[in-house]
Image 1 (cartoon, rainbow, N blue to C red):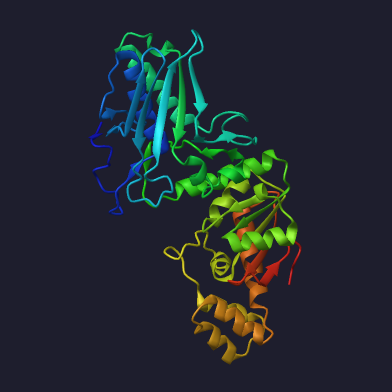
Image 2: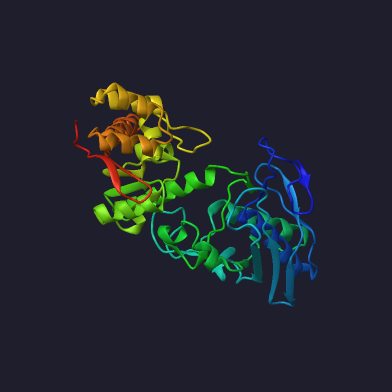
Length: 378
């Protein structure tokens, strides 16, 4: 096991960036400190917890309150390391009370923590948005404190209320409202560690979005690369908000999860440049991991009858959007060809899954510059 003090990860990741701690780890630390104070009258500061992979970070307390025989509250400030996490710097509070005999550990959503209102998530409707792994970490922490201080070990009966300062406001910048988690943030984390610029959190949100759409009975969802393509998909098909998947650059994540958990129809909507990458076979559309292939676009234009000068101009274009504009002016449907090829890539990933796919390519203003319907053959 390794121990890290001060609530800050002391070692850099392989990218040279400093990792941080999840909301679940911070809530566990605050819970450990609060329950210790409830039993002993003293708050451990810093407070050390054990994470699923054996790390033992120590967190400084940012606040504490103790009312004898009633409750104890401890607060921890989340340090997300070098990750651009919207919850970095948030104050996470745990208020712990004795519970009725035999009730075990009961979780409550305090101010700034959301409540589940739609099926399809890993928690039942009506439950606080405190995910299963953080719940288990807190149960284990409570059991450990109870065992050390002679209060029944794993049979401890306590109520844990987690709150996050300004959580309802911060949650507007997350997927929570769309997923039906209302009133605040979720308490998340499977390892307790935030890996800087990790794809895992976004991909997990994509999967939960598909789960919610399936549970709601939607037969048509749209994987969109951004807010403009979301507006276009909504205008074209009248899809409800919980049928819109904020795909971002992770087209592969959407397609692979739908392969295992199919929905009858998928619209892929995005900027022409990004979808040209999907057309060329890339499943990660981020600029750092894939580039617009102008030679590929020039070859598509050639197959559509573009003359040599236009083919050369497409190959030399400054951007993908310039390429589609050049072709549009010459009557060459490059946008439609890219949409068709992107659909082909998508169907290749979906394999035999019963998902019909159509694709819409847009420019920066949201104008449709190419599309391929599910039954199109060109």
